[in-house]
Length: 363
Image (cartoon, rainbow, N blue to C red; front, side, top):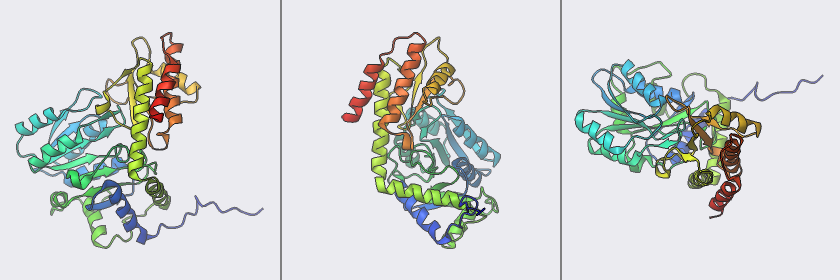
């Protein structure tokens, strides 16, 4: 019997000379000329690497918490000896710029401000432009978790003045989950490249700076070639469609989801201007368990999920991220939710909801 070669078992090495091209292409998506680093792990590792590389005794940070990810970032900073001031929004809701301004005024001497742009856990969008303006006016370096916003919302790193932006290609960009990237400004490097900066670690941005200085050659460690080939393929698709068109596609999916759910009489969790374009969330009516809605939708072949985080189990999330940002996926999610309401004995005009989705796409 002839043995068949399986490329998954014998993947060729990713060519070292192409890492620089990948970094450049990611920089174009982020609209930045800042340094772009490639991290050989999912985005949560890149975020921990940022916190680890910044943290030290004497560093003061304002950490905005609107999900578990924000809480983790504060813990990582504290682990390195930083003085961290957390400000938290109400569970599952965005922070408001006034709260941030008050915290900055009450705590002079802040060096770093960190926040998540869009939250897939709850479907909210934090007011990033306003917050960045507040930080820049005070000379504060900014760290933005853009994992669930790049490709779904407009993000111009250089024009906004974001110092560190962390992305994962697995969401709106439709790429692999096992590799991530971040952009780093000159001001951020000044905070990172100190004498006692962490070294010889996957969490060391200083080590990756050496990779930049060496001309973007072979990455430290043993890269997983399939992840980088997959990232390259994802960027091919992104550039063929264009980042602007991908954002428009997500905007349309979000608008259609909200229109369809509103036609059902659903309780949208946040207004459109505070909502992520990747996930739409509703609060289930009293007397209905989110788990019931999820199970019913699954019987129809539709995936709905619960909110993630403290006191968010009453939320239902409709996912229209990346390749799911299509008419078919949006319509299926809205219809499944409406049919679940009807199954529970509540009125829900699925026909009107379907028409609302279609009208949004035809507008």
